[in-house]
Every structure is written in C-alpha cells, then in structure tokens.
Length: 144
Image 1 (cartoon, rainbow, N blue to C red):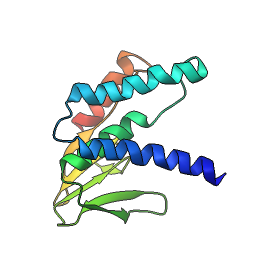
Image 2 (cartoon, rainbow, N blue to C red; image 1 turned 120 degrees about the vertical axis):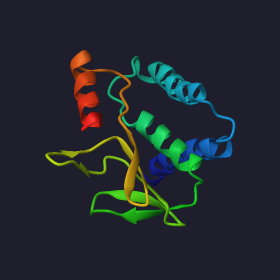
Image 3 (cartoon, rainbow, N blue to C red; image 1 turned 30 degrees about the horizontal axis):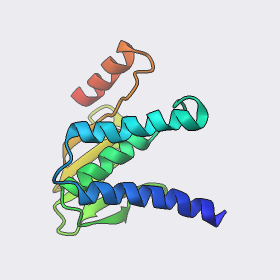
Image 4 (cartoon, helix red, strand yellow; image 1 turned 30 degrees about the vertical axis):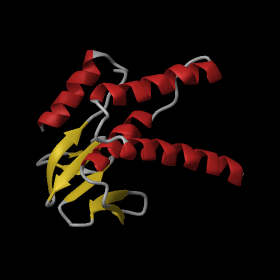
C-alpha cells in the first residue's frame, strides 16, 4: 500500500511544484485548463468525471498560496484542520475554515487573512448541483 500512497503524494507534489515553478506565467485560463484537462483525461479511465471532488479547490488554494510568496508553514487549527501561515506573520490561508458572522458560521472553500482579517473569501463551484438555487445560496453566504 505504500506504493499507492507514494503515487498519490507524487501527484499532489508534482502539481504543486508545477504551480510554484510557473506562478509568474500562469493565467486564470491556464489554471482552468489544468482542471479541465484532468477531468477530460479522467473520463478515459472511468468513463465519466463524476464523483471526483476537491481538485479545483486544491489547485486554486495552492495557486493563491504561491501568489502570496510560498513562504508558508502548516499550522494546526483543530485536530482535523490546518491552515498555512506566512513565515512573516502577515498572511494566513485556510480551506473550509469556519468564518463567524453575527448570526451564523460559514465554511468557505478558501479564506485568505491578512493580519487576522479576512481579505479574500472564495467559493468554488464547478457545477451547480441545484442550479440557480445553489448560486443564490452561495452569493448570500458571501454577502453575509
């Protein structure tokens, strides 16, 4: 089983290395193509691309982390949740990190903090499961 773990780790490491090495040249369209090409290729292995989630969040999360400079360390938030903090203490980036408003707690796909204030909140929707309802719910979350 260690061989399978190595394959998975290599995939994540190689993709992250590609993002890091090309951060100054990649466009938003390139990031989209990385994701789209993967799902097009996935169809060759299983006939469709459904049921495979999290890749879009991973790509965008690591892309933003590298845009911010890549000098980040993993910081334990809870037993099951980590964030990444810049070594200079200016930025922090988390995925599915709870964000409290006056009345609710939200778990956005990605939050970037600058000096502990959220400056960027991202919800990633590749496919709207319930169409316009999903879109409106997410827009309301971001508004709040």
